[in-house]
Image (cartoon, rainbow, N blue to C red; front, side, top):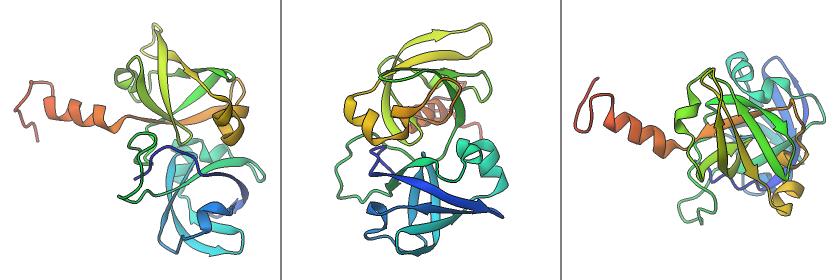
Length: 201
């Protein structure tokens, strides 16, 4: 579980045969093998680590369903360690399970993002609701639907977010990992199509 508050900008050192190596410092301070670290919002498991680096296994499935597959050596990545229950929840509850990939249509600070109809993510987006983009906890607004079942929405980035995350340098056409608010998913599941109190398992 994460909060969507990025702890540091690391970088991809290299990848091959489903093993990714990342350069980092802050997130290694009290990390160990088998710990979880979110990379651009994707929860990955530390399988090896050393002075200033750590590695994770990234399957072909994960690479194809997230924007991790488009990373190249040297690219910056947002890093966050899994939260502790005693931590302040500065953002919102983030699982590190990417729901889909969206596309930047306008750079920050007045960021604009397009979500396609694939994956049905539009129904989870609400005005002033929480959204996670590349592991960054943000608030979406100004949602405009298109005729394909997708939409575009805006995100206002403060200078600190611009400077401390990859979202600040994202350009039109860049892919970003999206995780919708998990609370919305649970509400939808509990209500179901037949209303409260039903169980369609």
